[in-house]
Length: 53
Image 1 (cartoon, rainbow, N blue to C red):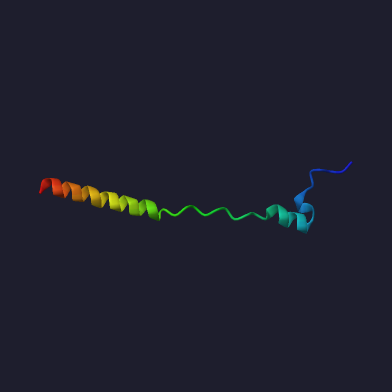
Image 2 (image 1 turned 90 degrees about the horizontal axis):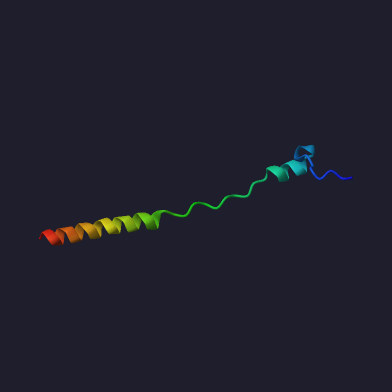
């Protein structure tokens, strides 16, 4: 009967395959969120300035 639970440290090739990790996807850019926030603040300030004028 074959051993289905092979110890990856048993040989170099299996150990390297075991420790090899795939690069995780990078986090999405927050630039659109920052730009949207700045635009919202500017629009609110403009509306407030026009309301008080």
